[in-house]
Length: 250
Image (cartoon, rainbow, N blue to C red):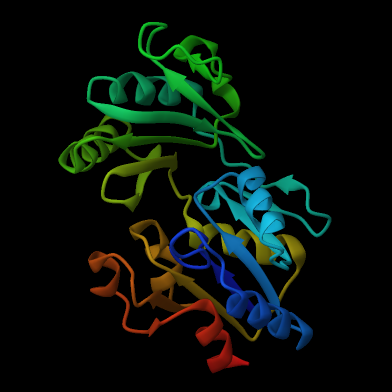
């Protein structure tokens, strides 16, 4: 039995679409007795919504960059929450810059966050003091300026050394998670939780936040050929698509 753990955005879903070729390949992979699942920066609810919409068969989900996993019954478990005071400080820091959006992610959902009622009149957004800070798994922000994203990641990690890690799925966005958390740790946690002992764990992704699972020595990582340059510069194995990767190992 093998495990294939795939990123979603830019990997399984390319340009807003999950190809039928990918779906058929996943079906063949699972029919051969292997497991397939998504490992994403999205929360579990968001992952499931898109998998169900595209009729993608799957066996597991790892959400919020490894902060939460699903057990054998599909329930959320293994939560790694950011300390409440740290989450609040991160939100406050984000709004010192030009931002497109800020959010707090939980296991099955997320909420938009705003600094004041004047910033955006939208019932879907909460003020910082209204956010349930004690259960936040991930705080995220999309910056108007890519240079701000890099600067904020460095500044915030220095503000809270050993407590948080900043992951960048794109050059303009940051996902902050609890230190020691990443996609590789989420996959390992899931394997332990389910008592799995696969002969190989294949991973595939395209963003900087995928590097932990693509470079892990105990996994067989592959970068999408369309991956970010920083990823292609660090991962030697590449693939054109999830379907092509499955074809290689099936």
